[in-house]
Image 1 (cartoon, rainbow, N blue to C red):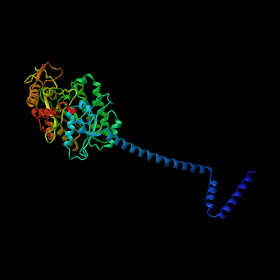
Image 2 (cartoon, one colour; image 1 turned 45 degrees about the vertical axis):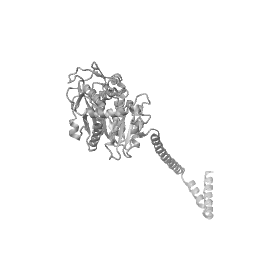
Image 3 (cartoon, helix red, strand yellow; image 1 turned 135 degrees about the vertical axis):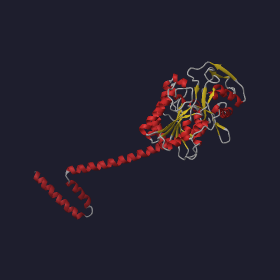
Image 4 (cartoon, helix red, strand yellow; image 1 turned 90 degrees about the vertical axis):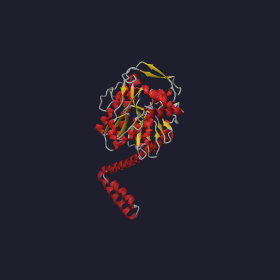
Length: 445
């Protein structure tokens, strides 16, 4: 039986082939079918599997292309929404023309640091694509807001983008969608007294979130940073402080600033981040425009800085100004502090960025005018500038207040050519008085 079946099959094939030879063009399809039947079954199976794999690969490629297109469209849509809903000029934000102003005016490290950002941009009109991530702080619990402003000079304007430094994904989107060349870090909570009561708040915002920013910078190849540090990193002494003097913060706030400096040092050594840490002494004054009109000033809530606190008295917003301690070993018995005008701070940031551009990798500088002024001198200067007398109340010393805290800024003058253009206390107070006199309620006016 098998032999007969085999013979029958062979005969049938001969007949089919003879028929195909006589059928003309249509024989090709039938011949193909015959050849397929003639193939060994393993070969047919291999060809079938290969065909299926080709089809699967083709559709996978189409899916990958489609997903990539959707991601691009989604990113563009996100950026567009950010620009439409949350992006505004930094100038408007700091003039109080936006809903975000309340947080900017109350929780930023120092509102004059915002002015420093603005003044910094004014100093850089020729830099077409300068990108700066300016980090401002927000009150925890309000959507965990830590204000971040992305500043660009390509169109002559500064844009404000609200974000959260704890959100590393948002940082990635920011760095992916804007051409940053450098980061200027104006971030931190700054109240030394509060830092001793709420240390976790300061370590989280000042240290941990700065680490997030540094990691995002490294991921996206932005390797230059200007850091706003503080004189609070030093052990106080009765002579001007130099950069090599011993560090020894007296508060959690000062410790977080020192930790941030050390972190920058390690990022420089290990991954090549270039940085300049600028140790501010007491920033003060206000920015004036080309016509002498005050456009940026201090507006803290609550206010803790001596000059704006004193200005509130002649403005009728405070009954008296307090002097804490009149028995220090100083000429008039009151504490002596160093002050630096906001315009001079801004110019120092520009020079520091230029130095990083030139290849410098790790810079630390004091920023002060090198002259100390006592609390009583500040009060008397406010009286002269405002033309008004007011009440002064003397009280006991506050714990932890050193008698003398001034800077020696010789290093930045020698290495970068920086000079304080407004070192006189009179000019610092005068610009601040102009701004507060025109904006007695701060940026809400």
